[in-house]
Figure 1 (cartoon, one colour):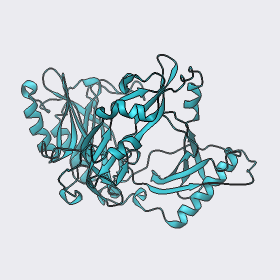
Figure 2: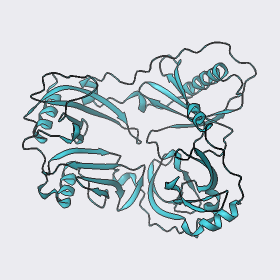
Figure 3: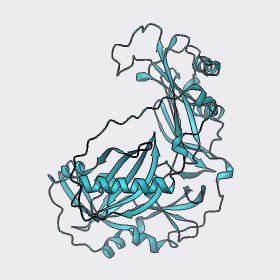
Figure 4: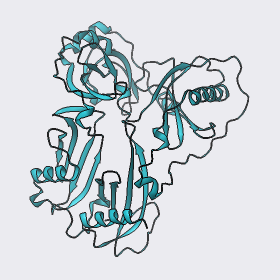
Length: 423
């Protein structure tokens, strides 16, 4: 076994008090963050000593410890004990489950500073949730830190997700936006949306706000949908047209989700192929392949699909398409095509059409009687504008923005103001 790996394994055993455990299995995996940096993670499964064999391959014994450590930084990303049960001796214990002690421990483990890089989000019995921030301002896409502990104050779960950027990646600004400055965008973001209610088996027509980030200038915007996904993507926006379909049957192939990562790759921080840019030649090949699949599987849909983005993931190139015609449903028609990055063959594709077929059984929405202007007048005082540092993929830095949102909508059939969480 690689001596560097042994050091990380021993560090994990000592840190979390795993003297009553043995290492059942371990492996490396890697991911690429929004800064296009490759991170290598050593993942370990520690079984309690009295467990000599795994009864079910798909489940782990209660008390099993899952530990993940970042090979690059030697910082722990997670430590989770199955079913909240721990046999750890001299592990992590918080006396009296004191919140301040937990915050100090997080600062020590992560190198992050409370209220400058993370802040308390939710508190429940035996659990604390923190969200990423920059000098107390919310961040998007947001990271989080989750801590769980039992009645004795023993750690049962710890996980860190997110970027938590250095100062060099943040364009610090004084927030100067107000609702008056963005009123022109408020009305623009108010959309007619059809919400399905699974409880009532009915579709409701509702005027609701489509969230958006507006930069500090009050004019430039960043779409909300591009910030919810932390992967780097290449924007395409190309609609496909054809005259002739392809009369062949497509055969789906199995997707290989797990990469075989060696210790040498991990400790040398070898860049993942997912971090490489998609070249112009690769773009052209992907567009030809996507078009051919559409001609084959959607022969009557010429002009109906737009290729929005391309992105790499685990040796594949994912092509994300959206239907050019979108109705008012809250969920929109989407297609993801998975292309082998080596052979440039379509391996598989996913269509969310089945989700829409469920709603065909629902009662149709009532007739719309309220105009957008009337709905806007009812919601105007309920709009929210909150400061956020948002990662701008074009500028490759975090910029100050305001998030336009509203937790209420207007029933377009009767004019009633309703909480969107109730739908």
